[in-house]
Image (cartoon, rainbow over all chains, first blue to last red; front, side, top):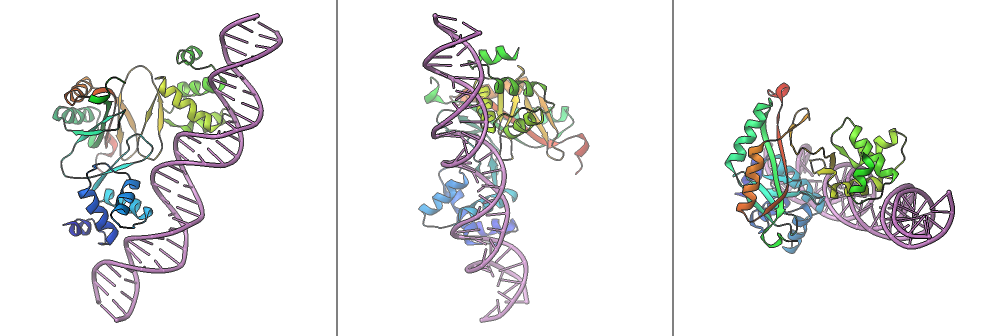
Length: 137
Length: 137
DNA sequence: ACTCGTAATGAAAAAGATTCTCATCTCAAT
DNA sequence: ATTGAGATGAGAATCTTTTTCATTACGAGT
């Protein structure tokens, strides 16, 4: 379970780390900022310092447990890695985020990289648009 | 020339705006942060306040003159729009940035958005990889 | 060219996000 | 249980960006 994942990451199994990982697994929000994590933990009665939240999230990222996204808004959001890769589409009006995976795009990205002598390691694709409810505005 | 572009954006033609636009056109760096712009202007002997640089860049973005990128690093970078849209491929070893445009990917993005009830307004695609000289490492 | 109202600027303060410092505490190997 | 390395918490510090507000500059109309 959690403890093993943390251990595998080469980190000591501490209460803050366990609680943060639990929260990421159980939260209804898929994309949370450090501040979000801090507050959600408070709601659950866990008083874990904000600095620790930042530290742990950064460590989880380095360990490949979570991914950090630099969406717009001046702050990073984190997402628990669940194996399956996907990209994001964000509503510029309400901020709603949906996920998608498109084989054609994935394939072409790899080709584009190769054509330019690059070996693709990773990529970040975010589509911005107006969702159903905000197409007018 | 510049003045007209600024006027077309619905902005008054002021010295700071002209100087910043000039700098973006002549700079060798394609991607500059607000801080970069501020310092490059200082180097040229133009003392324009940092707050003004932020304001003007934001206005230029709203006017479609420049694009704001949220690369990693905790700060935004701006790039002068030269008409032709393109995405970026970044070498994770040396930081080299190349630009590309792929019609297939562009097309699929629009389709993916539509399939999900979104109307695409913009997108950000960054491929990370190892360039020619760093494929080993 | 001159006047005048509006919009723009600069400096400093404020706000927001993230990192750092350091004294204290906790995990886990012995 | 002991102990030392690593982790934590609180607050300070740093960095980026925005806001405030008094002053200044643009440009429309004369």
